[in-house]
Length: 128
Image (cartoon, rainbow, N blue to C red; front, side):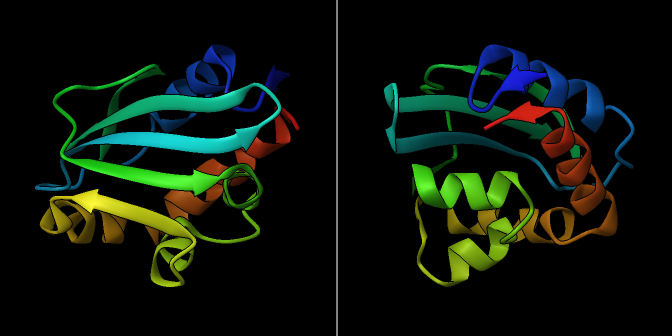
């Protein structure tokens, strides 16, 4: 078990995402900023290449295409699979800045059954 928003949580996400199918042109560097956590603001980065998670880690990505800003409460709901990231985005619960074309290119991945299964798997191994 790894704590949510920790390096261990991101490592588990990388391992679980290794089996995602390739999706041509689903490529983006995403900066996540989560506010209001018990540790304050947490920043992490995900790099997607053709629908596969190429890199993940805590900290900033100065070359990010897109930045997602969420409260801790909303990030927890997404991590637990209670709300899809695309729903949080559409409802304005995840603020997004940057290249909106990249965001839209990610939607087939983020709404796929494989991705939803990945979220469930990671959630079951996460301490909240």
